[in-house]
Image 1 (spheres, rainbow, N blue to C red):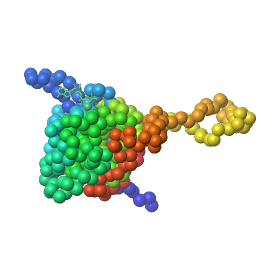
Image 2 (image 1 turned 90 degrees about the vertical axis):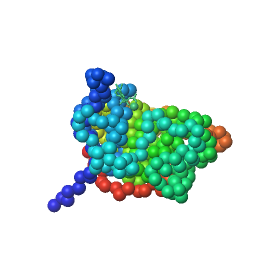
Image 3 (image 1 turned 120 degrees about the vertical axis):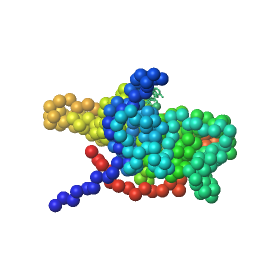
Image 4 (image 1 turned 60 degrees about the vertical axis):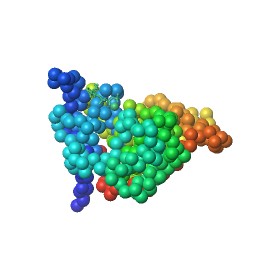
Length: 319
Ligand SMILES: Nc1ncnc2c1ncn2[C@@H]1O[C@H](COP(=O)(O)OP(=O)(O)OP(=O)(O)O)[C@@H](O)[C@H]1O
Ligand SMILES: [Mg+2]
């Protein structure tokens, strides 16, 4: 008899959620989210995609208990989003980080650690590990007001992890980062998911989502227009691609003749190419070998802060 796999409990459950913003006279102004239902499972990287104004940030703010739904239900880690204990288990990187410009990077992380009642010794340890993780140890004692956009995004990300959250919600995590910074943040997201953290990220940068997400939902005007696993959504199931070493013209002719005979039509041939991100990173890595000094000081390997706990992984749902 086949054993039945237990269905994991979703970390986030959204059921027929609608959010209507109203004006002073209570007249509907914008239907930001419209009848949205989705589940996010443990250990999953879930991408919320959509053009400007499609309802991504509104959905996130409802999950964080910052906005109330007009109708529908939302459960985060088994409770209502307003539950204080639930909030302790969530890390949040807002669309625009609101960091105190007059604090140094270290003071800022320490401040957020205090908000979560983390003791002094542990705060110090976490701050050091996080600064190292986001490649900002060298700027630890500089004021955040002096930071570039990319540096501010990194410190925002570190701040979102100070409480060792189970669920990490990242609104446009790569905005303002250069391609190297983007790649690092993406690798970090993947590394966090490997530790069993659940990640919800919103973006309109399609390549970012495609690179890291297991599941994707595309919103338009507050409603879901497509959703599923990235492979499921993007794979062209009616054709296959065969990659072989480059052949001599005579050999290629022979192979093509056989294929034509077998399938009765003309196959398409081209050279596989890198995408621009891969090419850019190769060029920069090469330049960096000769000019090591020129790098922004950002670390190139993905190291995850040691204090971030490995969550008990439940099996993911593959559909
Ligand atoms: N506080 C608010 N009051 C009124 N309308 C709002 C409010 N917040 C958002 N909206 C409206 O709700 C809709 C969805 O906005 P939301 O910020 O969720 O979009 P988004 O997908 O995050 O867009 P972006 O990619 O630009 O960040 C928009 O029409 C927006 O104008
Ligand atoms: Mg937004």
